[in-house]
Length: 491
Image (tube, rainbow, N blue to C red):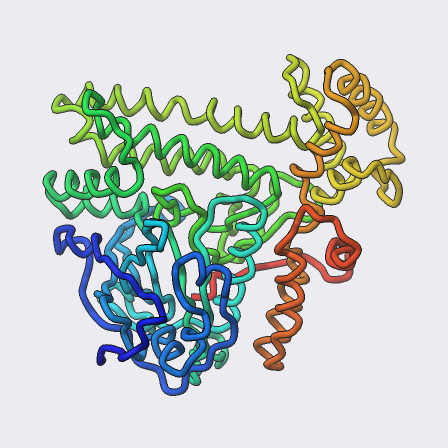
């Protein structure tokens, strides 16, 4: 592995603060080179935000860097160590197929991790090959881009390159490397790793680093570690509410997949719900529905309780008092989440003020949607546009009664009808990355080498609230003949 001689214009501006943590938290190693990398997609707008020259990234040297064949100036590649509860069972984990190149400091002074995913084996690969298949990497590129456009905190995808080498799963698949951007890759599992295998000093170093990186507005007179816990709880409460409001199902909410910075991370078996059903599960490995749509808020609370447990030695020197402090903080999650969700649902119905019976109004609509198999996104889209036809739900007595109650509720607020409609337009996406459309794009790319389907899809997904004529074809649910949809981790 040699340092690249890339042009100054590329714009790499690395710092490596994570590498200054105790060695316990990472292993230094370079990416494993690939035979013939080829760039298949680049997010030029994101590159510009990072201070990178997209033309240089598309050059031969730029692609070598994105593939892991060369290192940009200032990079210090490492694999992060962490643990995590996977479907409720604790395991030693870590970056088994990813490497952190370093942290790019943008022209605005912001700090972002630059990570290569699919870059080869690491000490944490646990028998895996350290590689990634093209399909799952493109899925992450599509879904993370859609989440960003929907206004949901997320890791970003800068680029995908094919490696020219196959990966063996059930069959031979084309290999790829994804360049992922994140405010950090600190996870609940990182703290679990420190609590399980490190010293109290190691745990404190990690906590102090996290506070400095994400929560530096802590005051001198605060219990800084309680502040850390409370801020992480707040971020997750808001994030999970945003997921629920658009029908997003993460699919594998293990503790190692909960980012301390409050971003959606690790798009494995993720998908968006079509017909409203709280029990919806798409992941082929979630056979008991642990991570079903309706369970996501509860699992988030469970994960945060595991995070709180790791901080006990820092919260108070007396363990009983530390537990009491932690329990007090965790007990706030439910109300915080519910407050964000309820506010979001009010906005989806054009409600500016609060009334006691609003939650009943919302519940009655959701119950009717569930009973009649109504599409989640398109039901709210129809309410927004007032186009109440072509949906079985709208012809039912339940909906007729509900609609009258909703109109009465709207009439009791001072805001105009136009203001309510505008609130709904900005709160109800007309478009989500429909699962069958995602598969259509992936199939064309992986099997036929045709990326035009994905590029058109990405273009319409970039403005999910526009409700433009060009998006109409992408808003339809799948044909019932498609059968149940299943997703896979793609590891």
